[in-house]
Length: 351
Ligand SMILES: NC(=O)c1ccc[n+]([C@@H]2O[C@H](COP(=O)([O-])OP(=O)(O)OC[C@H]3O[C@@H](n4cnc5c(N)ncnc54)[C@H](OP(=O)(O)O)[C@@H]3O)[C@@H](O)[C@H]2O)c1
Image 1 (cartoon, rainbow, N blue to C red):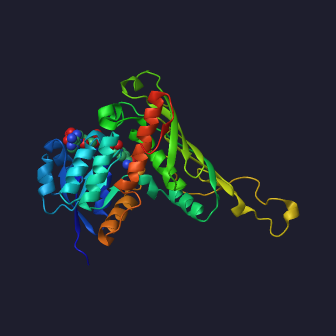
Image 2: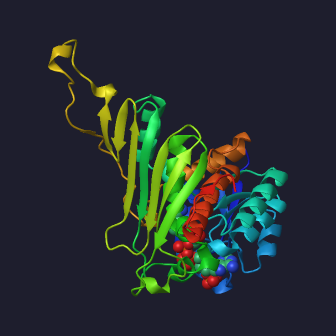
Image 3: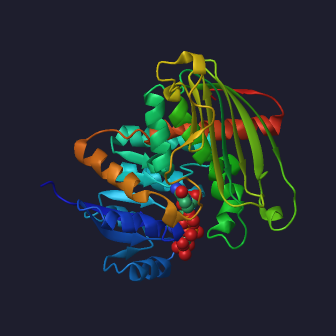
């Protein structure tokens, strides 16, 4: 049996507990350290999770700990590049919470450092392990939609002072912009399904300026239209100043069928049983009963799948489908869309 890997978290807040629980449930990993900006926070998280491990406020000391093989970077977005680059340079594998950066320069630095160090990386687009996202991915591989010509994707999540991390989610320094803060989940799902490159984006953004959303330093509502190399067009939207339950919308329209969230209409369900005179057998959507990406609560997110995947990648010496190099394109689109909204003109990619 391969040696167990040692995992550490850096940034002992809300999401870090889910990382720890998932590492603890993986038989090939031990959680060996907890770090945070303040030692008291690291110690409190370790106690909450029943961990008797070294706690650090000095990140360099955490990285120097020989038991640490993997670092889960769970701090606010504004320090992710610095912490991810240092971890890679120390030879540690990294699980980067999103956003992995707050600007393009940071995205490049992190991408280059991870590539140079040759460590494994996963960026926490955890919905790639959501059952509905998996079903859709399998249906696309089975050609249920055919050539995709149009798609719509959205992340609508009301955040306010009640939300953990509201302070860093509100600031440009802490999270970059609305697309990087949360819309990146919708952008990542869109890219995962489309399997193509975006060549141009045009976006518009807005704000209400009503409390509590007036605290948000960037426009908390943005919509972007993307043109893809293969000819498709898609729309991706994000809002934090909405008054609705958490919503994650998916629409994929192609030559052979359409997927709308967990519903399908198309050629796979013709069902005329050899009697074409009765027309299409299917006259309405079929529904896949499954777990939807319909909650903003981290305890609902499939971190177990994500962390088991990272461990498999490390042990097999294989690159993840959602490594830093792949996630670079998601972050680039988030940055390009915001630039387009600010400049009032289309932006071509790559930047
Ligand atoms: N993938 C997902 O679905 C998902 C879900 C939720 C959150 N996230 C991401 O995870 C990250 C953390 O979010 P969260 O909701 O867990 O926030 P949070 O509850 O505010 O936790 C962040 C923690 O980091 C610590 N911290 C602050 N500055 C630090 C620094 N410079 N170095 C190390 N630790 C620092 C803070 O504690 P002290 O300052 O007291 O040490 C705080 O407890 C964000 O990037 C967020 O976008 C991702």
